[in-house]
Image (cartoon, rainbow, N blue to C red; front, side):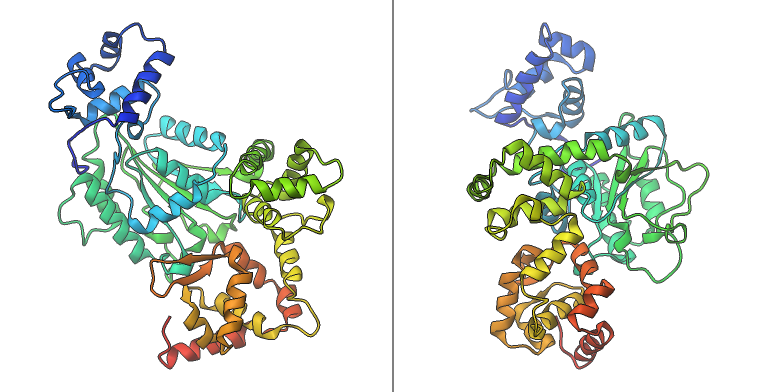
Length: 461
C-alpha cells in the first residue's frame, strides 16, 4: 500500500506525546513496549530520536511501526507524526472539517458505538440520524480528523457537490492516493472497494464517512449515491442523515452486509451533557468572552451555572442554535432582552432573528425579502454582483443584507469575487415554511421561475 510515504519521522511535539504516554501508562522500560508491539527496540529509539541522529536529523521508521506503538500507548499515529495522511482528504473538504471541529465537545457515546460496531462486524453501514443542527456533520468531521486514513465525502447542496458522479470521482481520487490503485478511473464503487480491501494490512480497516445523505441530488431510484449493497470484509461506511420515511431510505443491502443506526434524538441526557460542555467552552473563547460576560452581568443575579442550564434547555440539544445564539448575545443582538426572553429551539431563533431584523415590519421590506429568497432559490454559492442581477435590487441594499445576515452566511474567499451561501440548510428550511412564506408575501414558484429565466438568458453564477 502506498500512502505517499513508506517511512516517517516523529515531530518534536510527537516525541513529547510519546514520552508522556509512556510515563502515564507506567511502563517499566521501552523494552516492555517492544515486547507488547513486536517493534524492535532500535526502531523505537529511532522514532524517539535516541539513535541514528545525523546532523540533527532524526532517522525515519516504517509507518507500520508507528501504528503499533501508537496503539499500545493509546495515541493516534497523527499524534506522533505530522501530516500522517497528507494527501487523503480533498482540499474542498478540509475547510469543512476545520470549521466543524473548531469547537467540539463530547459525543464520545457516538464514537464508542462506531468503534464497537467495527469491532463486532466484519463489514457494514453505520448511520447517524439527527435533526438539523444536532451536530451530525461535526461528528463526521471529528471522526475523520482523529482517524487518519479515513476516506470522506460531504454532500453540500449549495456547492453542487451532492451528485453520484461527483461522489464517485472524489472517492476514487482518495482511494487511489491511499492504496496506489491502478486504472480505477472507470471503476464503479464496488470494484474500487474490492481493490482497496485487497491491499489492507491484517490489522487495518477501510472506513468511509459520508455526510448529509439527505442532501443528495439523484434522479434514479437506486441506492443513494449508488452505494453498494455488498461490502468487502473490513470495509465500513459511516453515514449521517436527517430522519427519513421508509420510502426515502434508499439503501438496499445484501443479508451479508451489517447495518446499524444511532438516532441522536434517543440520547437526550448524553447530548445535554455535551451541550453544557459546549456552552462552558464557548464562554472562554477570546472573541466572545467580553460580550457574553457583559450580558450575563447585566442580568439580575444571573449566575454562570444558571446561564448554562437555561441556554442548554432553550437549545433543545441543538448545537447550531448554540452557535447562533451565543454569538448573537456576545455581539449585542439581545442587549435589551432578558434571559427568559431568548428564543427557544433553532426554528424559534430563526423566527426571532427574522422579526428583529425587521422582516415582519409594516410595510414589508420587500426589497430585502426578495434578496434573501433569491439566494434561497439559487441553492448555490453566489457573488454579490450576481445577487444584484438575479434579485434586480440595487447594490447598496444587497450589501446591507449581506452584512445584516452575515451570521447565517459563509463567505467563500477562494472565489474572486467572493461568493456567499447559507451556512446551514436549516435556514433554507425555515425560509420555505408556509407560514413564513405567506407572512413575507412572496411566491416561491415565481422567484424560482425568475431565477430559471435569468439562467436561460445566459446569466451565470
